[in-house]
Length: 194
Image 1 (cartoon, helix red, strand yellow):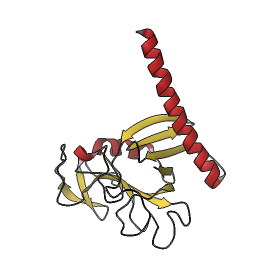
Image 2: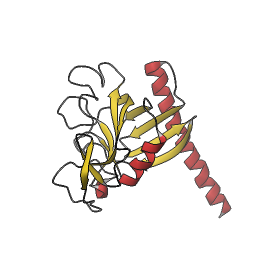
Image 3: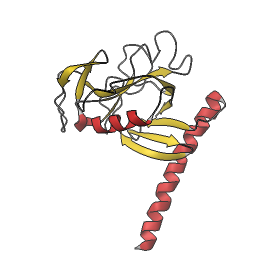
Image 4: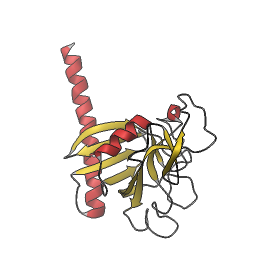
């Protein structure tokens, strides 16, 4: 039994090391540096990893775009590449509070724990607004992540977390986005890869 547990721990550590290595290599290739803190969104795994000092300190299920990956304006796709958190909104918004135009007007969203689709693409609890960091990839005319309003945010469709279901943003459960929001600062890097 002990050997099985040790084997599991070694596999888990190996997977985490692979993730950190992949993130670091991308950053070195594109920017010539690594970052002491970075959020990594894996489209394939539908997970967000919070990496600090080359260690994964948090792992959260997410939902990326239902239409897949892409950078074009009005595509409803999730953009790839290196980003940074340009703005944070909702620090005083209550759990499940619905925001319109990044402002909470007092309405609490109905949260669906099954695969029900809400009538509106509810943005709830917190917003981390991303800015693209790679010209021609996610920054520039018709492909700019900031101008496309690409967020990491809470959702009323929590039952769809773990599967692609958004209109381009990265959705998280409301409790997870509140926690992550409290941990990260403005300008924290965010890497989104397939």
